[in-house]
Length: 218
Length: 222
Image (cartoon, rainbow over all chains, first blue to last red; front, side):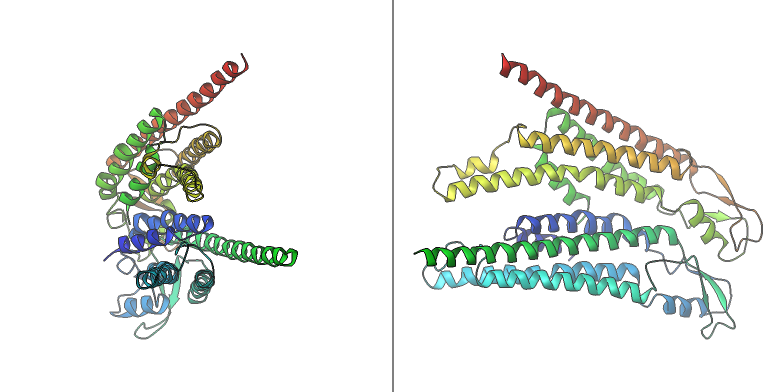
């Protein structure tokens, strides 16, 4: 079980997505997953070993690290990628449900994968959920770490540290660069989701209006 | 998800590339991605552990390392490879869009062979020419930008053996020693050379495409 499983899931979703949805999948693969696996994971690999405090008191470093990093950036990033990709499964399940219904009855749908009727609602809900989760994680990052900055030095005075101790974070600049990259790609994904939402709502309300107009003409 | 997934995407684009494009792709896979994964990552693997400063002051090593290596070479190369490969996605998306249009025409009654559609090679003409040429242009820009960023960040392409650091909390000017500087310089110059070759291939492909279109225009008019 690894990121390949998520990749396979998202590739499956791609079939039933709009053009913007496919761009979203490409952005998630290339600029988020691939960057995470190929670059970001290694930066945070030895973050605890390389976290150094100016004190010999045993336990002080552990306690300070735990205080300043309740959940590591890289784990939050992984959670974000998984949770943000999951709403797309709703669409896959709905299409599978439609295809299952067709197996037992006669042909009910012209094309089970076409985004209309109930599937449109599911698709819109998945977009809203994706956007919601992105925003939640961005806010979580901001609140947990007081902004998106990573300082070089943090001051810690939690027991058993005997006084206010200087603790040094490893590779703060590199971590900050990749954090900004994460924020930028999240924002891009939010914009893509909102565009797709607007496009679908606009397209279908236009269809409804046209149908009503045609009926009135008849 | 790793470089293998990127390879699958790019191999898909390969079908619709020119011969120079295919050579570029081979150079990218063998001399850049493979070298990065198989060799370069190991050379830079222990870079902070073996970065040693001549002081016992806690925190001095961390701060000096962060000052001299704001972003590691290996991460910059990974970013460069991802950004340089991304324009090929534009071509893949355009081809997918054209296939989708053909499938739609098939559903509306036109006779199209599905098997032929799957394996069809789209010639680089019309709108696809513009997409393809833009993708090469963006590739060139990204390569140049990353080469400049490397030069600017590390004052050239050589890895020094010794760095002098006086950032707080180092008590005075402290000597810090980089691990494996010669090996790192060798790989930096190698990756730089291969970037240069890729840029030349991209330029050649761009010229070839422009000349091809210019030569067709006079034939049309005569």
